[in-house]
Length: 428
Image (tube, rainbow, N blue to C red; front, top):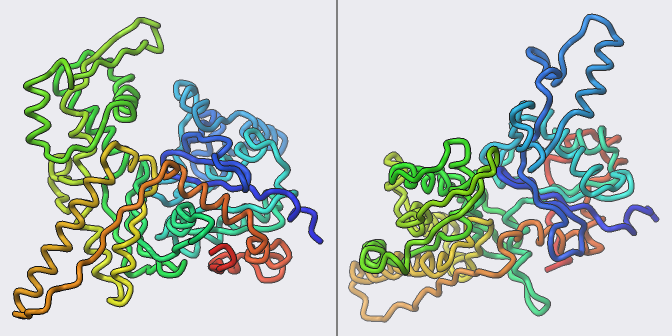
Protein backbone atom coordinates (compact mmCIF):
# COMPACT_ATOMS: atom_id res chain seq x y z
CA UNK A 1 0.00 0.00 0.00
CA UNK A 2 1.27 3.47 -0.91
CA UNK A 3 1.98 5.26 2.41
CA UNK A 4 1.05 8.63 0.85
CA UNK A 5 -2.58 7.48 0.50
CA UNK A 6 -2.83 7.29 4.29
CA UNK A 7 -2.05 11.00 4.57
CA UNK A 8 -4.58 13.71 3.66
CA UNK A 9 -4.32 15.03 0.13
CA UNK A 10 -3.29 18.64 -0.49
CA UNK A 11 -6.03 20.75 -2.09
CA UNK A 12 -4.99 23.98 -3.86
CA UNK A 13 -7.56 26.16 -5.63
CA UNK A 14 -5.67 28.70 -7.75
CA UNK A 15 -7.81 31.68 -8.74
CA UNK A 16 -7.05 34.86 -10.64
CA UNK A 17 -7.31 36.98 -7.50
CA UNK A 18 -6.82 34.57 -4.60
CA UNK A 19 -5.54 31.07 -3.94
CA UNK A 20 -7.08 28.81 -1.30
CA UNK A 21 -5.00 25.95 0.04
CA UNK A 22 -5.29 23.31 2.73
CA UNK A 23 -5.70 19.61 3.40
CA UNK A 24 -8.54 17.31 2.37
CA UNK A 25 -11.15 16.66 5.04
CA UNK A 26 -11.13 20.20 6.43
CA UNK A 27 -14.14 22.50 6.12
CA UNK A 28 -12.13 25.69 5.54
CA UNK A 29 -8.88 26.24 3.66
CA UNK A 30 -5.83 26.68 5.88
CA UNK A 31 -4.66 29.74 3.94
CA UNK A 32 -6.13 32.20 1.47
CA UNK A 33 -3.59 34.50 -0.22
CA UNK A 34 -3.52 36.78 -3.27
CA UNK A 35 -2.22 34.98 -6.37
CA UNK A 36 0.83 37.17 -6.89
CA UNK A 37 4.59 36.62 -6.79
CA UNK A 38 7.21 39.28 -5.94
CA UNK A 39 10.69 38.64 -7.35
CA UNK A 40 13.80 40.75 -6.90
CA UNK A 41 14.31 42.71 -10.11
CA UNK A 42 18.06 42.04 -10.14
CA UNK A 43 17.39 38.35 -10.83
CA UNK A 44 14.90 38.77 -13.65
CA UNK A 45 15.94 37.30 -16.95
CA UNK A 46 15.40 39.99 -19.57
CA UNK A 47 15.47 37.71 -22.60
CA UNK A 48 15.35 34.05 -21.62
CA UNK A 49 13.04 31.45 -20.15
CA UNK A 50 14.17 31.62 -16.53
CA UNK A 51 13.61 34.58 -14.21
CA UNK A 52 17.21 35.28 -13.24
CA UNK A 53 19.84 37.06 -15.33
CA UNK A 54 22.21 35.09 -17.50
CA UNK A 55 25.80 35.32 -16.28
CA UNK A 56 29.01 34.64 -18.15
CA UNK A 57 30.46 32.31 -15.51
CA UNK A 58 28.80 29.12 -14.35
CA UNK A 59 29.39 30.01 -10.66
CA UNK A 60 27.80 33.47 -11.01
CA UNK A 61 24.90 31.93 -12.94
CA UNK A 62 24.43 29.31 -10.20
CA UNK A 63 24.59 31.94 -7.44
CA UNK A 64 22.02 34.12 -9.18
CA UNK A 65 19.72 31.11 -9.49
CA UNK A 66 20.02 30.23 -5.81
CA UNK A 67 19.37 33.83 -4.75
CA UNK A 68 16.41 34.11 -7.10
CA UNK A 69 14.92 30.99 -5.53
CA UNK A 70 15.35 32.50 -2.07
CA UNK A 71 14.46 36.13 -2.69
CA UNK A 72 10.81 35.94 -3.70
CA UNK A 73 7.49 36.27 -1.89
CA UNK A 74 3.86 35.46 -2.53
CA UNK A 75 0.47 36.72 -1.38
CA UNK A 76 0.12 39.65 1.00
CA UNK A 77 3.87 39.58 1.67
CA UNK A 78 4.48 40.02 -2.05
CA UNK A 79 2.14 43.01 -2.20
CA UNK A 80 4.14 44.72 0.55
CA UNK A 81 7.34 44.32 -1.52
CA UNK A 82 6.04 46.12 -4.60
CA UNK A 83 8.54 49.00 -4.19
CA UNK A 84 11.63 46.76 -4.25
CA UNK A 85 10.45 43.70 -6.18
CA UNK A 86 8.76 43.01 -9.48
CA UNK A 87 5.17 41.74 -9.09
CA UNK A 88 4.07 38.85 -11.28
CA UNK A 89 0.44 37.75 -11.61
CA UNK A 90 0.64 34.15 -12.89
CA UNK A 91 -3.08 33.82 -13.70
CA UNK A 92 -5.14 36.10 -15.93
CA UNK A 93 -8.88 35.58 -16.34
CA UNK A 94 -8.65 32.06 -14.99
CA UNK A 95 -5.75 30.92 -17.22
CA UNK A 96 -2.10 30.47 -16.24
CA UNK A 97 0.00 32.85 -18.33
CA UNK A 98 3.34 32.78 -16.49
CA UNK A 99 4.45 29.23 -15.70
CA UNK A 100 7.73 30.27 -14.06
CA UNK A 101 5.86 32.47 -11.59
CA UNK A 102 3.25 29.74 -11.12
CA UNK A 103 5.95 27.20 -10.24
CA UNK A 104 7.45 29.59 -7.69
CA UNK A 105 4.01 30.27 -6.27
CA UNK A 106 3.32 26.56 -5.76
CA UNK A 107 6.77 26.15 -4.21
CA UNK A 108 6.00 28.75 -1.57
CA UNK A 109 2.51 27.37 -0.97
CA UNK A 110 3.80 23.86 -0.34
CA UNK A 111 6.96 24.50 1.65
CA UNK A 112 6.29 27.80 3.46
CA UNK A 113 2.53 27.82 4.03
CA UNK A 114 1.41 24.20 4.18
CA UNK A 115 4.89 23.10 5.36
CA UNK A 116 4.59 19.61 3.94
CA UNK A 117 6.75 17.32 1.83
CA UNK A 118 5.06 17.05 -1.61
CA UNK A 119 6.45 13.53 -2.02
CA UNK A 120 4.26 12.39 0.89
CA UNK A 121 0.88 13.70 -0.34
CA UNK A 122 -1.43 13.30 -3.31
CA UNK A 123 -2.47 16.64 -4.80
CA UNK A 124 -5.82 17.98 -6.01
CA UNK A 125 -5.50 21.13 -8.13
CA UNK A 126 -8.29 23.11 -9.79
CA UNK A 127 -8.64 24.56 -13.27
CA UNK A 128 -10.96 26.79 -15.25
CA UNK A 129 -13.51 24.99 -17.47
CA UNK A 130 -11.86 26.63 -20.51
CA UNK A 131 -8.34 25.41 -19.73
CA UNK A 132 -6.49 23.85 -22.68
CA UNK A 133 -5.09 20.28 -22.57
CA UNK A 134 -1.59 21.75 -23.04
CA UNK A 135 -1.94 23.69 -19.77
CA UNK A 136 -2.81 20.46 -17.97
CA UNK A 137 0.36 18.94 -19.38
CA UNK A 138 2.44 21.84 -18.04
CA UNK A 139 0.81 21.43 -14.64
CA UNK A 140 1.58 17.71 -14.66
CA UNK A 141 5.20 18.30 -15.65
CA UNK A 142 5.76 20.77 -12.81
CA UNK A 143 4.04 18.63 -10.20
CA UNK A 144 5.71 15.34 -11.16
CA UNK A 145 9.12 16.66 -12.20
CA UNK A 146 9.73 19.56 -9.83
CA UNK A 147 7.80 18.45 -6.74
CA UNK A 148 7.85 14.68 -7.34
CA UNK A 149 4.27 14.22 -6.11
CA UNK A 150 3.03 10.60 -5.96
CA UNK A 151 -0.38 11.41 -7.47
CA UNK A 152 -2.22 14.32 -9.10
CA UNK A 153 -5.85 15.07 -9.89
CA UNK A 154 -6.80 18.21 -11.84
CA UNK A 155 -10.46 18.98 -11.17
CA UNK A 156 -12.74 21.38 -13.02
CA UNK A 157 -13.89 24.16 -10.70
CA UNK A 158 -17.66 24.01 -11.47
CA UNK A 159 -17.83 20.28 -10.73
CA UNK A 160 -16.24 20.89 -7.34
CA UNK A 161 -18.64 23.76 -6.68
CA UNK A 162 -21.57 21.39 -7.29
CA UNK A 163 -20.01 18.82 -4.97
CA UNK A 164 -19.69 21.50 -2.27
CA UNK A 165 -23.48 21.88 -2.15
CA UNK A 166 -24.06 18.18 -1.52
CA UNK A 167 -25.42 16.89 1.76
CA UNK A 168 -25.33 13.41 3.24
CA UNK A 169 -28.76 12.40 1.95
CA UNK A 170 -28.51 13.58 -1.66
CA UNK A 171 -25.88 14.90 -4.02
CA UNK A 172 -27.17 16.40 -7.25
CA UNK A 173 -24.40 16.59 -9.84
CA UNK A 174 -26.55 18.11 -12.57
CA UNK A 175 -26.83 21.87 -12.46
CA UNK A 176 -25.47 25.21 -13.61
CA UNK A 177 -22.56 26.76 -11.74
CA UNK A 178 -22.34 30.56 -11.74
CA UNK A 179 -18.71 31.10 -10.77
CA UNK A 180 -17.92 34.77 -10.17
CA UNK A 181 -14.31 35.15 -9.15
CA UNK A 182 -11.96 38.11 -9.02
CA UNK A 183 -10.88 37.99 -12.66
CA UNK A 184 -13.43 35.88 -14.53
CA UNK A 185 -17.13 34.99 -14.53
CA UNK A 186 -18.23 31.68 -16.01
CA UNK A 187 -21.66 30.09 -16.36
CA UNK A 188 -21.06 26.36 -16.69
CA UNK A 189 -23.70 23.63 -17.19
CA UNK A 190 -22.85 20.24 -15.67
CA UNK A 191 -24.73 16.98 -16.37
CA UNK A 192 -24.03 14.02 -14.07
CA UNK A 193 -20.62 15.42 -13.20
CA UNK A 194 -19.60 16.14 -16.82
CA UNK A 195 -19.18 19.69 -18.09
CA UNK A 196 -21.14 20.53 -21.26
CA UNK A 197 -18.28 22.42 -22.86
CA UNK A 198 -20.18 23.71 -25.89
CA UNK A 199 -22.65 25.59 -23.67
CA UNK A 200 -20.19 27.39 -21.38
CA UNK A 201 -20.77 31.13 -21.30
CA UNK A 202 -18.58 33.86 -19.84
CA UNK A 203 -18.68 37.61 -19.37
CA UNK A 204 -15.77 40.06 -19.12
CA UNK A 205 -17.03 41.37 -15.76
CA UNK A 206 -15.94 39.96 -12.40
CA UNK A 207 -15.09 40.94 -8.83
CA UNK A 208 -12.14 43.14 -9.75
CA UNK A 209 -14.38 45.16 -12.06
CA UNK A 210 -16.74 45.85 -9.15
CA UNK A 211 -13.76 47.18 -7.19
CA UNK A 212 -12.62 49.36 -10.10
CA UNK A 213 -16.14 50.73 -10.55
CA UNK A 214 -16.43 51.58 -6.85
CA UNK A 215 -13.00 53.24 -7.07
CA UNK A 216 -14.14 55.24 -10.11
CA UNK A 217 -17.38 56.40 -8.45
CA UNK A 218 -15.56 57.55 -5.30
CA UNK A 219 -12.94 59.38 -7.36
CA UNK A 220 -15.59 61.15 -9.47
CA UNK A 221 -17.35 62.27 -6.29
CA UNK A 222 -14.10 63.85 -5.08
CA UNK A 223 -13.36 61.73 -2.04
CA UNK A 224 -9.99 62.65 -0.57
CA UNK A 225 -8.14 59.35 -0.95
CA UNK A 226 -4.53 59.14 -2.10
CA UNK A 227 -4.14 57.43 -5.50
CA UNK A 228 -1.91 54.65 -4.12
CA UNK A 229 -4.53 53.73 -1.48
CA UNK A 230 -7.69 54.18 -3.56
CA UNK A 231 -7.87 50.62 -4.96
CA UNK A 232 -7.43 49.00 -1.55
CA UNK A 233 -10.03 51.33 -0.01
CA UNK A 234 -12.47 50.54 -2.83
CA UNK A 235 -11.96 46.83 -2.22
CA UNK A 236 -12.65 47.20 1.51
CA UNK A 237 -15.74 49.29 0.77
CA UNK A 238 -16.97 46.63 -1.67
CA UNK A 239 -16.52 43.82 0.84
CA UNK A 240 -17.98 45.75 3.78
CA UNK A 241 -20.84 47.88 2.46
CA UNK A 242 -21.96 46.78 -1.01
CA UNK A 243 -25.29 45.02 -1.56
CA UNK A 244 -27.61 44.13 -4.44
CA UNK A 245 -30.71 46.26 -4.87
CA UNK A 246 -34.04 45.18 -6.34
CA UNK A 247 -34.59 48.52 -8.10
CA UNK A 248 -31.82 51.12 -8.53
CA UNK A 249 -34.27 54.02 -8.94
CA UNK A 250 -35.81 53.24 -5.54
CA UNK A 251 -32.33 52.93 -4.03
CA UNK A 252 -31.35 56.37 -5.37
CA UNK A 253 -34.50 57.83 -3.78
CA UNK A 254 -33.76 56.12 -0.44
CA UNK A 255 -30.25 57.56 -0.34
CA UNK A 256 -31.50 61.03 -1.31
CA UNK A 257 -34.40 61.06 1.19
CA UNK A 258 -32.54 59.56 4.16
CA UNK A 259 -28.82 60.14 3.65
CA UNK A 260 -28.00 59.69 7.33
CA UNK A 261 -29.44 56.16 7.23
CA UNK A 262 -27.93 54.90 3.98
CA UNK A 263 -24.68 56.83 3.50
CA UNK A 264 -21.88 55.18 5.45
CA UNK A 265 -18.43 56.40 6.38
CA UNK A 266 -15.22 54.50 5.86
CA UNK A 267 -12.36 55.20 8.25
CA UNK A 268 -8.83 54.06 7.61
CA UNK A 269 -5.15 54.80 8.25
CA UNK A 270 -2.69 55.76 5.53
CA UNK A 271 -0.04 53.03 5.38
CA UNK A 272 2.90 55.35 4.69
CA UNK A 273 2.21 58.21 7.10
CA UNK A 274 -0.01 56.51 9.68
CA UNK A 275 -2.44 59.44 9.49
CA UNK A 276 -6.15 58.65 9.86
CA UNK A 277 -8.57 59.49 7.05
CA UNK A 278 -12.26 59.01 6.30
CA UNK A 279 -14.53 59.06 3.26
CA UNK A 280 -18.26 58.78 2.55
CA UNK A 281 -19.74 55.66 0.96
CA UNK A 282 -22.91 56.46 -0.97
CA UNK A 283 -24.43 55.28 -4.26
CA UNK A 284 -21.53 52.88 -4.90
CA UNK A 285 -22.96 50.61 -2.20
CA UNK A 286 -25.57 49.32 -4.67
CA UNK A 287 -24.13 50.54 -7.99
CA UNK A 288 -21.04 48.31 -7.62
CA UNK A 289 -22.85 44.94 -7.77
CA UNK A 290 -25.35 46.40 -10.25
CA UNK A 291 -22.83 45.95 -13.08
CA UNK A 292 -23.75 42.24 -13.15
CA UNK A 293 -27.38 43.15 -13.92
CA UNK A 294 -26.87 46.34 -15.96
CA UNK A 295 -23.30 46.05 -17.29
CA UNK A 296 -23.68 49.03 -19.61
CA UNK A 297 -23.26 51.42 -16.65
CA UNK A 298 -19.67 50.16 -16.40
CA UNK A 299 -18.75 48.97 -19.88
CA UNK A 300 -20.65 50.39 -22.85
CA UNK A 301 -19.30 47.64 -25.11
CA UNK A 302 -21.00 44.87 -23.14
CA UNK A 303 -24.74 44.85 -22.51
CA UNK A 304 -25.74 41.27 -21.65
CA UNK A 305 -26.74 40.98 -17.97
CA UNK A 306 -25.79 37.90 -15.95
CA UNK A 307 -29.40 36.57 -15.61
CA UNK A 308 -29.83 36.67 -19.41
CA UNK A 309 -26.51 34.85 -19.83
CA UNK A 310 -27.63 32.09 -17.45
CA UNK A 311 -30.87 31.67 -19.39
CA UNK A 312 -28.98 31.64 -22.70
CA UNK A 313 -26.56 29.04 -21.33
CA UNK A 314 -29.34 26.65 -20.29
CA UNK A 315 -31.26 27.15 -23.54
CA UNK A 316 -28.17 26.02 -25.48
CA UNK A 317 -28.05 22.64 -23.67
CA UNK A 318 -29.99 19.47 -24.69
CA UNK A 319 -33.70 19.98 -24.11
CA UNK A 320 -34.12 16.94 -21.86
CA UNK A 321 -31.89 18.35 -19.07
CA UNK A 322 -32.99 21.99 -19.11
CA UNK A 323 -35.54 21.66 -16.30
CA UNK A 324 -32.94 19.98 -14.08
CA UNK A 325 -30.48 22.78 -14.81
CA UNK A 326 -32.96 25.55 -13.99
CA UNK A 327 -33.74 23.73 -10.75
CA UNK A 328 -30.13 23.72 -9.55
CA UNK A 329 -28.28 26.96 -10.33
CA UNK A 330 -25.37 27.06 -7.87
CA UNK A 331 -23.47 30.20 -6.88
CA UNK A 332 -19.72 30.04 -6.39
CA UNK A 333 -17.03 32.62 -5.67
CA UNK A 334 -16.55 35.56 -3.36
CA UNK A 335 -18.27 38.01 -5.71
CA UNK A 336 -21.60 36.19 -5.28
CA UNK A 337 -21.63 37.00 -1.55
CA UNK A 338 -23.31 40.40 -1.88
CA UNK A 339 -26.47 40.71 0.19
CA UNK A 340 -29.61 39.78 -1.85
CA UNK A 341 -27.50 38.77 -4.88
CA UNK A 342 -29.18 35.36 -4.95
CA UNK A 343 -32.69 36.84 -4.62
CA UNK A 344 -32.17 39.34 -7.45
CA UNK A 345 -30.65 36.71 -9.72
CA UNK A 346 -33.52 34.28 -9.12
CA UNK A 347 -36.14 36.95 -9.77
CA UNK A 348 -34.57 38.04 -13.07
CA UNK A 349 -33.93 34.51 -14.39
CA UNK A 350 -37.48 33.46 -13.50
CA UNK A 351 -38.86 36.54 -15.23
CA UNK A 352 -37.05 35.61 -18.47
CA UNK A 353 -38.21 31.98 -18.29
CA UNK A 354 -41.85 32.88 -17.61
CA UNK A 355 -41.91 35.44 -20.43
CA UNK A 356 -40.60 32.89 -22.92
CA UNK A 357 -43.08 30.21 -21.79
CA UNK A 358 -46.01 32.65 -22.16
CA UNK A 359 -44.83 33.78 -25.58
CA UNK A 360 -44.39 30.19 -26.76
CA UNK A 361 -47.90 29.18 -25.80
CA UNK A 362 -49.39 32.37 -27.19
CA UNK A 363 -47.83 31.61 -30.59
CA UNK A 364 -49.03 28.01 -30.59
CA UNK A 365 -52.62 28.95 -29.52
CA UNK A 366 -52.73 26.00 -27.14
CA UNK A 367 -55.45 25.79 -24.54
CA UNK A 368 -53.49 23.43 -22.30
CA UNK A 369 -51.79 25.32 -19.50
CA UNK A 370 -48.00 25.09 -19.50
CA UNK A 371 -46.27 23.24 -16.70
CA UNK A 372 -44.25 25.89 -14.82
CA UNK A 373 -40.47 25.72 -14.92
CA UNK A 374 -38.94 25.69 -11.45
CA UNK A 375 -36.04 28.15 -11.09
CA UNK A 376 -33.88 27.73 -8.03
CA UNK A 377 -30.70 29.65 -7.24
CA UNK A 378 -28.70 27.75 -4.60
CA UNK A 379 -26.83 29.86 -2.08
CA UNK A 380 -24.99 28.55 0.96
CA UNK A 381 -22.58 29.93 3.60
CA UNK A 382 -19.47 28.34 2.08
CA UNK A 383 -20.01 29.51 -1.49
CA UNK A 384 -16.99 31.81 -1.15
CA UNK A 385 -14.85 28.68 -0.72
CA UNK A 386 -17.18 26.37 -2.66
CA UNK A 387 -14.57 25.15 -5.13
CA UNK A 388 -11.96 24.47 -2.45
CA UNK A 389 -14.48 22.78 -0.16
CA UNK A 390 -15.69 20.59 -3.02
CA UNK A 391 -12.09 19.56 -3.61
CA UNK A 392 -11.71 18.81 0.08
CA UNK A 393 -14.79 16.57 -0.03
CA UNK A 394 -13.68 14.83 -3.24
CA UNK A 395 -10.12 14.23 -2.04
CA UNK A 396 -11.40 12.70 1.22
CA UNK A 397 -12.95 9.70 -0.56
CA UNK A 398 -11.10 6.43 -1.25
CA UNK A 399 -12.07 6.70 -4.94
CA UNK A 400 -9.98 9.87 -5.23
CA UNK A 401 -6.71 7.95 -5.03
CA UNK A 402 -7.77 5.52 -7.75
CA UNK A 403 -8.79 8.41 -10.03
CA UNK A 404 -5.48 10.28 -9.65
CA UNK A 405 -2.73 10.19 -12.24
CA UNK A 406 0.29 8.63 -10.55
CA UNK A 407 4.01 9.25 -10.81
CA UNK A 408 4.47 5.75 -12.29
CA UNK A 409 1.90 6.48 -15.02
CA UNK A 410 3.60 9.78 -15.77
CA UNK A 411 7.02 8.12 -16.11
CA UNK A 412 5.56 5.45 -18.40
CA UNK A 413 3.29 7.55 -20.63
CA UNK A 414 4.49 11.13 -20.23
CA UNK A 415 2.60 14.35 -19.56
CA UNK A 416 -0.18 13.48 -22.01
CA UNK A 417 -1.92 11.45 -19.27
CA UNK A 418 -2.76 14.74 -17.54
CA UNK A 419 -4.83 15.94 -20.49
CA UNK A 420 -7.92 14.20 -19.12
CA UNK A 421 -9.04 13.32 -15.61
CA UNK A 422 -11.78 10.76 -14.95
CA UNK A 423 -15.03 11.81 -13.30
CA UNK A 424 -15.80 9.25 -10.63
CA UNK A 425 -19.17 8.65 -9.00
CA UNK A 426 -18.07 7.20 -5.67
CA UNK A 427 -18.84 10.43 -3.84
CA UNK A 428 -22.21 11.11 -5.49
